[in-house]
Image (cartoon, rainbow, N blue to C red; front, side, top):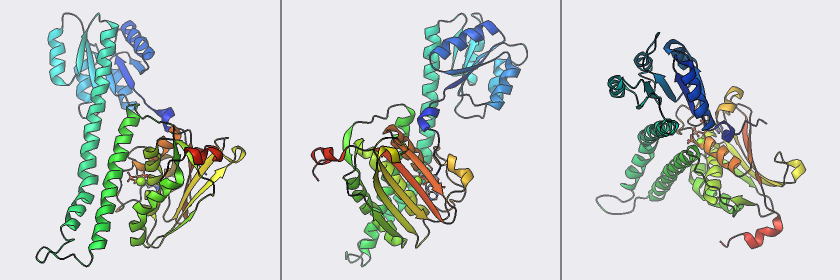
Length: 379
Ligand SMILES: Nc1ncnc2c1ncn2[C@@H]1O[C@H](COP(=O)(O)OP(=O)(O)OP(=O)(O)O)[C@@H](O)[C@H]1O
Ligand SMILES: [Mg+2]
């Protein structure tokens, strides 16, 4: 069973490279921005700057325009094709002309020496906001063009044949068509939900309430969402749910999406005729990796599985396995799953034996069972 470092610990990284052959200025900028929470590196001159940009990832470059070896224009020219990187140029007070030229060229903004720290900080914050907006726009375009168009076309296509156009009679296969429409609608909703959740995660705006959520109700709802896909692919699904009402404090729609992402993968990556099991179990503190009373939700499926070297990568955003040709997806479900579970104080573990069985285990802190009935909402 493998566990991986928390996504929250790695996030967010806002890396800045300051390039200036005046080492004192470079160090001052570094220390000022470091206190504002940025990860800042310094390069003394354009040549060293280009080397660092080649070796490491930076989202923002603050560069002097006039440098002896390689100047600021050359630095920008060299990175002309790199996406999601912005430049702020620093100029002497007599060189506003070249600063304007730099803006026309590629720079996001310029600062004239000597500059005020508040202006520097505000300019840097605006540059990062622009990078985020650019990324959001591109991810959105990619999601719409690659992932939403196909299920949406299918919905339009099937809805046009539910009734015979000439006679107005219900097509004998109407039920199958409606099921396909509903299943494609659920796919689009999952995609939009995951995308918006990932945007909130990245903006640090994901809010987790502490409402009592009965995980078994949530699983019941999910069964009806996946029933059609399960039947269509002749999969067998065995559920083994614990007796206790498993009550988790948190955000119901996020927990729904997390468990849905898990089941969606089990359904999608099982071959025709494959087997899926879904189990819930309450673990005492000495049995749980959370070292507190926990709910285990374990989903296993047969199929090709995940090679060991891919396991740490599957929770990264937009990361898909190597063997997914033909299986739709955008590589966002497991990223959201892990983040949501961890934001609820939980943990995800995965174990896969390729061409045999893949199991995902979610551990979530669970409320004492005697609080379950009074807190559980009516259904
Ligand atoms: N149950 C599973 N069996 C086999 N491979 C899996 C399973 N779950 C996840 N994976 C692998 O992990 C990758 C990442 O999973 P993730 O859910 O993030 O993406 P996806 O399912 O491809 O796309 P999306 O969830 O956005 O529709 C998958 O592409 C697949 O390679
Ligand atoms: Mg998925």
